[in-house]
Image (tube, rainbow, N blue to C red; front, side, top):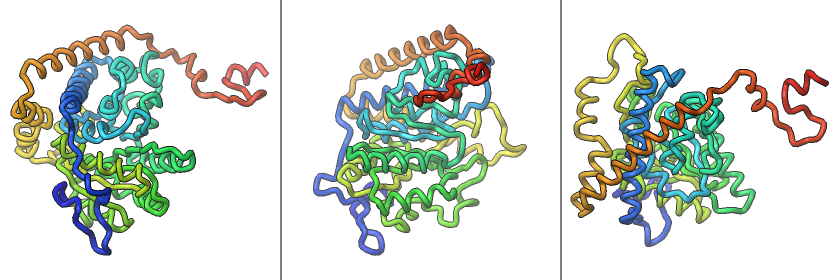
Length: 362
């Protein structure tokens, strides 16, 4: 099912996206420039992160989302600031797509005290409730039940907050996916499940691991809308996400969106997964050459009459922001092992110990 078929009906008479007559929602002029800015911020942040990883400034693994920027930004721009979001292990881009600050994100990658999680979360565990980012997780499918619970919380609190849940195609075969979608459907929870389908769960292709490779069709089993969009087209993703958000706020329940996208680098940058290539080289090169979402969107903006100097100004702005983020991260203090317990214990209840030292003293 694609964006043009959103008003079609699946077996049983369930409408894919039934939100009324004004069902087409498009990016306006300012949003288009902001979409370009955020996509570029993600790309340049990831590129700089890979450089810093090579330089030894970033420890551990680095899962770059280069190539998937349109799916992230298109969905995030459909949200309000107070809306919530959960991410994945490949989640440097999701906070940026939601509007988070680059300085603290880069410091977190480097394990510095100025990081978004004091340097304790690292690459796969960004969280910042001030931007609605409630969690990211190195566990495949780990954010799906958390997003469902967050949406349930909104229902209990009586607010119209929506939760956007990112996950990959590999997570669709996890039990948490099925349990969460069923619960969200039964209770009509305000949650959008967005699958970034890059075609590979690490090195296993979709065809090898999915009995039904059309992931959007799985929504029918839970009585919710399911739609597939071009994940390299930021406008197409925004339109689908905006409709799903409107539907959720209206109390009509969850939507499953599958954004077909592609990661340009290995599962983990700089780490070969297997001794033999699992993706045809010509496939990777074709996506880089013909399906780069930033190149495609830049070309589209120019065709629509956006001035070249306006885009160039954004590019300079983003480059400067990345430089400042690196400078901030490099100058931020490194986390000291003796402060670890300071962030492990916290109890608002009088008489409960808040740290290991306090426990030992007593």
